[in-house]
Length: 219
Image (cartoon, rainbow, N blue to C red; front, side, top):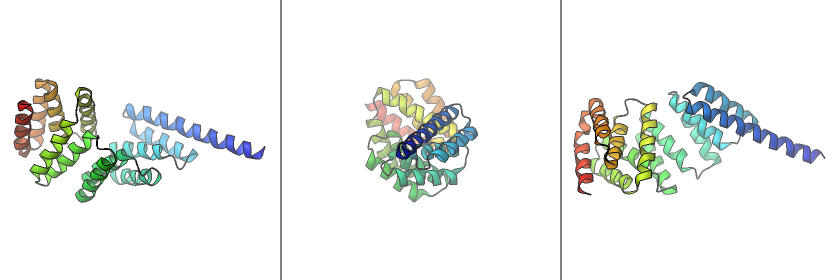
């Protein structure tokens, strides 16, 4: 029947869209962001309301430095999927890079309200508070992140910070936080490398690094 044909067509379009999302994901994993964006564009031609395609395209745009485009795609993701904590978290990071600090803090707070276990969000919000001179608030967020981190979580956090550094090689706070996570793992050599790199980018971080090392050493 005509209805069955329409349904089959809709299912085919949906499957095709998801196949292009998977292609985009593979390209993103290979740091081929321009082609990944192209794959997500095609996915959205087949399924214009596919939130995952907007979310993943935003990440690729973010990696390419297309920050305004990334914000627009995170906005669309949240229109389609308002409970997506990760979209709030990622949009906040981009907003911070655009120096829209109040909006970034609001987004990170919204992300934590939806998912209090997003440890990287505590780190990122703490980083921004630190840049704004709120050392006490920053350390409180860092403590929350560390408190929530088990062994496997630390490995995940390190992977997250490594991705952040790949996106922005001058992200000094990401080096600090990766160093702190490595310190908790007992990997002192790699931690010291991260601390040295962070201080070469931003010497004012020394006080926070010393305070966190002292707190960790007392546990």
